[in-house]
Length: 86
Image 1: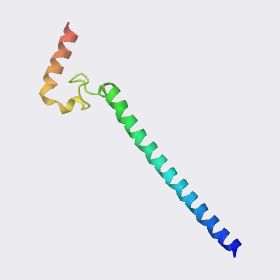
Image 2: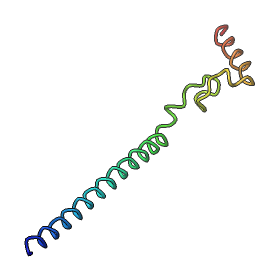
Image 3: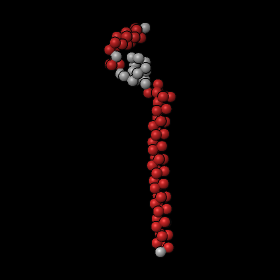
Image 4: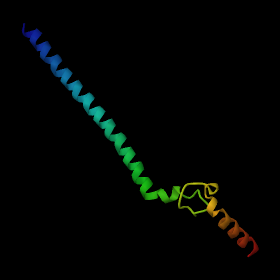
């Protein structure tokens, strides 16, 4: 009878340990995922100006291409002509 009780206690303890390990593993993976996201957001906040240099119209103030700036295309064309003629 004591062997049977010992076996039940051992299995309960082992199950509790396995549950704790699974919970810790899940928590660690979630924390790593959140840390990676926050690191990438922090990186973008620090170095976002490097990524925002696609637009030749507004000189890197936005990520849109110059064809999305019809109001400034004439400015761009006149600047190019002055640069060529000057």
